[in-house]
Length: 85
Image (cartoon, rainbow, N blue to C red; front, side, top):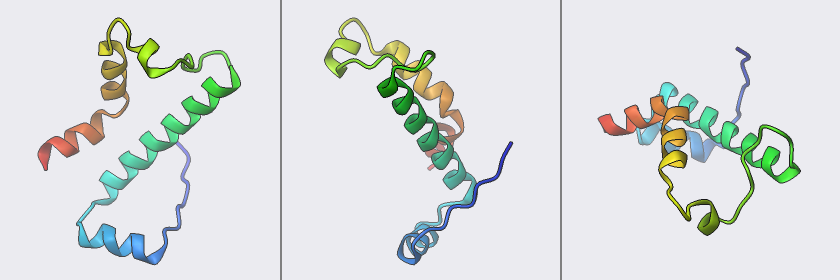
């Protein structure tokens, strides 16, 4: 695993402290956000293995269950932390 340092503006860091958001919660959120961003880039560029780019209405025409299951699986730590709040 690689480590990336993220510098936050002071007002954002202060708000995180005020809201008592733990490093673990923030790490989980940042990893999920980066994954989503990378998937979006792959889909937009047409790279193989990326999510298929479709309008939401078409993507969920039959069911959104597969998408929701994938979202939960990829962000399980974040959802578990949110459930404890």
